[in-house]
Length: 260
Length: 260
Image (cartoon, rainbow over all chains, first blue to last red; front, side, top):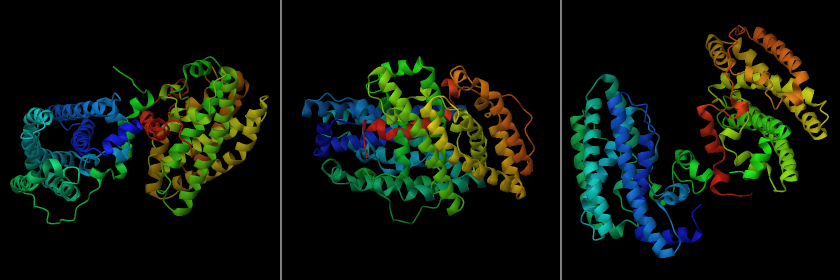
């Protein structure tokens, strides 16, 4: 596990928690998407989703590297991106529950990507104006990729939502399952407020407008339930998350310090 | 991971490999059975299978403790049962492939238990005559439990095989799936020969007679295919096994040396 001093430093530092939350969302969504590798419905889309997973992994790496640098400076203990990804346990991960849910079918997977990527699109647009130069640079780089992720996933939501009776029914089911997990992304928690308080209502409104437009085009009825799940940002995760970490972290846990 | 010296000692010691193979079979079957805990078809049987898993875990512990004692004496490095269960990687585990396959449905689970427990029954009867006093004592203790495991699983094979059309069809499917994994149990590999060479043909014949009798009672046609999977005894496992270990070993990997 992470050194106690490093854990304590993260716990008391709003900026680090904020960076890790951004990184964890990117990593966990990337990991779920990577589970489709070799299992996609058609070759081209298998590769498309694998590429998206790689983009998200790259975004996670940039954010972990930045957090690791800050941690090393603050604690004097050399900390690496790998340690942050592989040596934290469930309670220390800050990703939204939406990112960690199992993939389900292809429809559920593209719907999840659409809901999260759309949020990231408006969020990273705001982060491009961050007065943290490093975060701004990461946002500049990421936004191009995320723009494509939104377009790709929205296309799929429309294609399946407005497709056959079977594909439509599956998208209705996917939306119903995932909807209650969307609220957590949109409500800033304590450590997010210093960085995003002013922009959060704009991000929320922009996200809602985008979702409404695409769902309408996809012939999907916009959900009306507004009771929302939460917990991930505070380290309280679903039962699926421990299994995800056990698998994802196995190599570094079994062979500490392993390198290519 | 295990200390290199300990690994080398295991690798060159027939007795240790034999003990670990017995222990690994008990542990991995126990772990699979434990995954049913809380998911059994009816409460009483949920508890029955959980108890069987606990029996098998106890057998594994006795064997690991004995192996750990021998290792500590031979290498001078203190080795514990937990290290043997939790700090070896896939290639070092010697259990038969049959023990590590996913549970499938209840029918597949009871069929697997019947196939393995019946083998263990005749094997441990022979081990009761071992000239290794410690192994003899473990066999004496285990045989009572295994006798019950055979009876319980055989009852279920008959009940479902000779049950409804649906339950019969499922047992046919389970037997077809599992059959090709039974041969590995019955063919002694190099490190087993010094301990069981003379008895192995008797064990095989006794197992075959038992299986044939119960399948006949269960109205299930005895499989005729004799092409057999193998590899587990040599550390070459199915794709399922890495996931099983990742989950089973997570705590000791994440929190090395953790104790209750």
